[in-house]
Image (cartoon, rainbow, N blue to C red; front, top):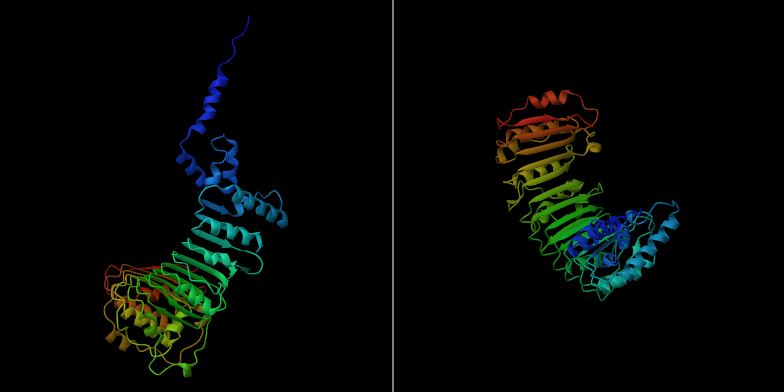
Length: 427
């Protein structure tokens, strides 16, 4: 007897072909969630998938795009270069975003040709992170790319050509561990009329931050600098500034009656969230510290301040901010513990503060890193007495602080009957 041949192969073919029948937008969605290495490998699935990866608008080359079969950094680097060359050569669609961030990549000359290629393709978002070696000098062709809306550079050296007229469409700029001359920095910021987000971290080549950006909404900076000036920044809503240098101010350089607090806030009428980090409060306290600002920060709802409680001028600056923020809802106070060991020869006059400070609208307060010294406790007592709608105060002391602090806090009077004090053990 002759057996009937199985019909399963045709059924298998139908099952296997289902992946080829997927709509194009579904395939695009699937590819967008894959690494570039996995996306290229989908070309073996069917003829419909063969070159689909070559139209991906977002290209990310990171640690996932190279297999770790070899531990030789040179082998990994050469393989990465070949992958990027291959992808850019065969890519046939629009390239909206290009990101290169691999832990084994140093600045190589290939970056110049890739940047030139991408600028000719009207790239919109360009991200380059060099994790090893010296800072990479960006090619001049980058500064001719007017299609850019987002630029992010890490460990790079920027030297715009004399013909640079700015990025007219740039909305977001993120520069970290960069070298840039003072005049080049100022020209870069002022020549980006659409700039909305600016991040600067660990820079050198310029020490005076002159920020002229009429559409700026978000500003985050951390580094060593001498001075900061805002101009035409009336839309700025979120500001975070960390000064990574404990400097001593030369008082002879100050004009009589000058105040860094007044100068800083004159162009920030609509700030909603402010973070004063590292030693920046010391900078704000330079000069004559006013009781309150001439124009209150009516939109400020969140304030974070790192403070040395043994510096009377820093306490005055912090109180000025509180008096000038009638709608403040959240407050974070971070003590600088390395400076708390100094013993004050005289204390702050809190009686005057009680007479000049209005009732605050604080609802949530977090205090971190305190050691239990009297200026800290006086400040906490003041917050509790002048916050009638306070709901929660969280206190987390620094290391080696005993439980006596908790007992002291619980004895403080509170203007709010609902105020809850949460004591967190130091970690």
